[in-house]
Length: 151
Image 1: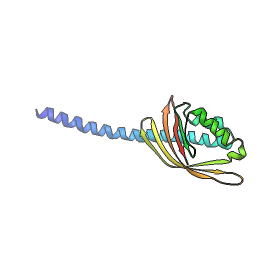
Image 2: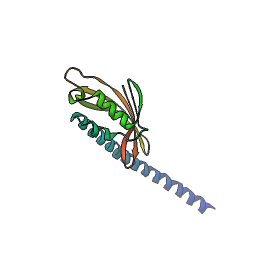
Image 3: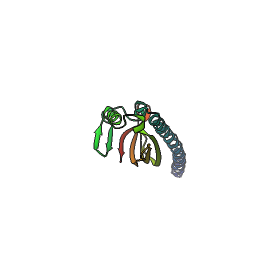
Image 4: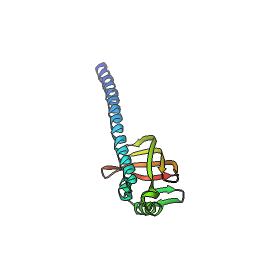
């Protein structure tokens, strides 16, 4: 009986040690995930600043379930969002230069991250700015924005 108790004790200790090392792997994978998301964000910033809204939209989930919440309410769908961007920003002068600042980026599940940030749009006659909340999901092998609330 004592031998069984000792074996069980050793198994529990080894399990705890292994779970700690798994935690370290999780930190590494979080770091990799955050970098992948930041790379998408950088691509979007560059695409916007070169006037390429089609490329900018590659950072969003191409689905009718994608949501965008702005000053005019909730919009559903990737195509609707692209159409609204093109209507509201018809040329590079209206688009200006876009700059993002990430305030927080948090992993909330293996395939989802939550981001809060600030945007600044620098144009010839003004520099509007505001904040955004993004829900990122890992879908079809890439990180995409599935919900955007920008104000």
